[in-house]
Length: 200
View (cartoon, rainbow, N blue to C red):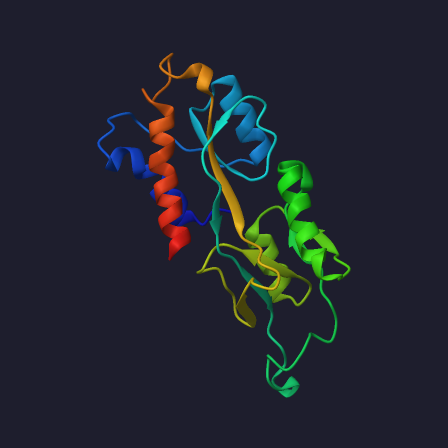
């Protein structure tokens, strides 16, 4: 999921750049956002990559760093870096139907080290975090502030599991009833916010 503070900065980018259009935001799965942009219900959307775009225009792929949240090890287990967990927990994931290609890439990347990957489906990151806190799953998140008691955090670097995002718009609707006169230009503003976050 896109962290809430970042989503707010992305949504506010056009106004901060001087655009007087009124903004409204929608949180929905990638598949729904793509459909809404294609139909004209939305001017722009930030979606997970890869996705089947069906003729929509898209900007560059932005890679946000992520962290793995896992249940904290008991104190008697010693150094947390001493080795793998005694048992492998499933990875909490959103339903595959929300972004099939991105979901498959994520799972394939997890399995790229020859490990068997089990997943458990959750409705959102709060539900995933609850499973982590209960010792029943691990969660990959781009939210640097997401945590709970007895939950450990480490960078997702082996293998890297960035949150891949793109801004999409319908090029056939540019200038025809769109809330933004230049959707491609507005998309670049959104990309700039995402890219600055990714570069931190």
